[in-house]
Amino acid sequence: MRTYWNTHHGLHTLDQWQPNCWVQVTCPTEDDAAFLQQTLGIPDYFLDDIADTEERARYDYDDGWILIIQRIPYVKEVKSRTPYTTIPLGIILKGDVCITVCYYETNLMIDFVTYQQKRGVGFTDSVDMVFRLFLSSAVWYLKRLKQINARIEAAKQHLDRKVNNADLIALSRLQDSLTYFATSIRGNETLLSKLKFKLPVDELDADLIEDVSIEINQAREMTGIYSNILESTMTTYANLINNNMSTVMKTLTLVSMFLMVPTLVASFFGMNLVNGMETQVWGFPLAIVISVVLTLIFWWYARRMSWI
Image (cartoon, rainbow, N blue to C red):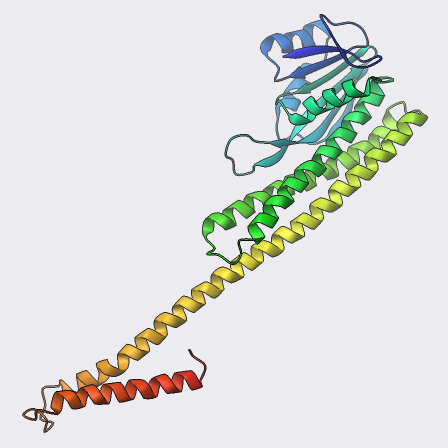
């Protein structure tokens, strides 16, 4: 699906492509790909690069085309090993052509369009739009990081209940998400530093770049903090599991030892040997008394040694 936006004096949709408009392509179809390659003439290989979910953030220049890929946060709607991840967003510039391509529908782009419409100012040029996309990306990284932190805090509140493998698996998935975030944020930060020298930047753009740098730095630092918190939480979970296992093993060992005392007495008096109590009526009660006394002695010794 592609949408044409008039970027002057606010964002307004257009019926067809016009010079200096913004072409927003989301989940491109074959018709969209044909329009981009045949009508606008963008390099075909770049669409394949954007479709690769593992593509790194980078800047390229090819026959007058400015080709930019930045990584943006994305939340998978279906159950996944990594609920929070990052995906590539392609930005293509050349003269009066300005295109963004993303193979996923994201809240970031929807919010970006809505916010720019509320501003009612539009973009001064395509370079201004590029850096505003970077700013929006950094803000959405912060939003997603807060959501991840909320999940971590919810998990920490359940540390006093029974801990199972599902809890550890859920936390490990968040750890994977934070790893993706940290890698993508560092890539965007490096890309931003390069674009400052590759794109024609005016004074207004310089102020915007400074704001973007602050937001990206904050996102990077928060990612590191939350990674440390999550690692500490997972370590606590693992220690609790080990402690619970040790408690269970200790209990089973004590029960076995308590049962061993009367079993030993019964085995001794139950041997097929002459012990003088075969014909005595008090033989069985005596064995019971000896078992109880020895068990009580062992119980007293275990209490004294703080085994129980």
